[in-house]
Image 1: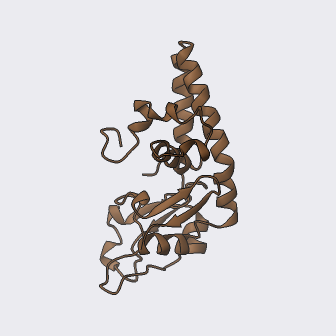
Image 2: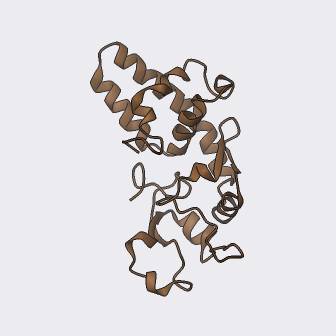
Image 3: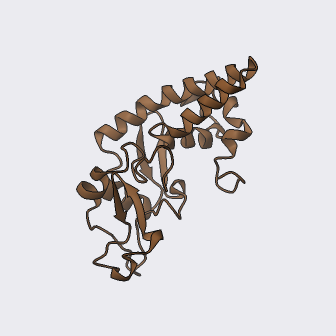
Length: 191
């Protein structure tokens, strides 16, 4: 239902402790038992931030990004050196605002996740180079299950951009071209 170890599908930090009706029941009572309307969320994102907010555009379309259907990076950009999200469009703006995606604890957590992720990517490569495939697999599994997996995803996307070495350790950039990381991208067979 959610990436990692039952992490919140909105902030990616806290453990999911509740089920959010993505489209609130007061607006869509017929979706009460619709499985696709149930998303794993932490209490901060669900009860303190979103509550029953569900902004819509003038034409009635939902403005919030549905992490089970949309690629958040079509609407959001994670700035790795600040840990803050920037909106690419109105849907990104609404999602940042409603879920408080740039609240202090999340920004700090993403900032700390960058060097941790870099270290694990480099350690994985070293394990592969040493022929220790068990350790490499354990490191990859850990990467995919730690909080703020959005940092890894943003790093993989940024690695293909000019200037990637300015926002992450230069030796990490070529390592992110590994097919296992590229398989995380939308449109790949593994995504």
